[in-house]
Image (tube, rainbow, N blue to C red; front, side, top):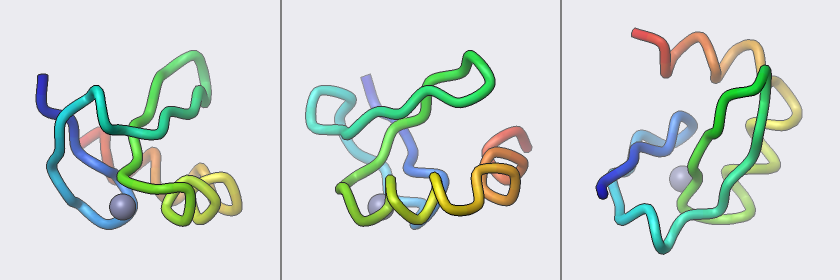
Length: 51
Ligand SMILES: [Zn+2]
């Protein structure tokens, strides 16, 4: 299954993703760097992915 990184917008396989739970929703990231960026400003990035 393909997932999209809300931070950089990259599409990749779910198996390769780094995951993080926020507001009982699971987010997928291409790397730890993107995950850290998300955690710093989760409101900003989670809004983007709801479009
Ligand atoms: Zn990324």
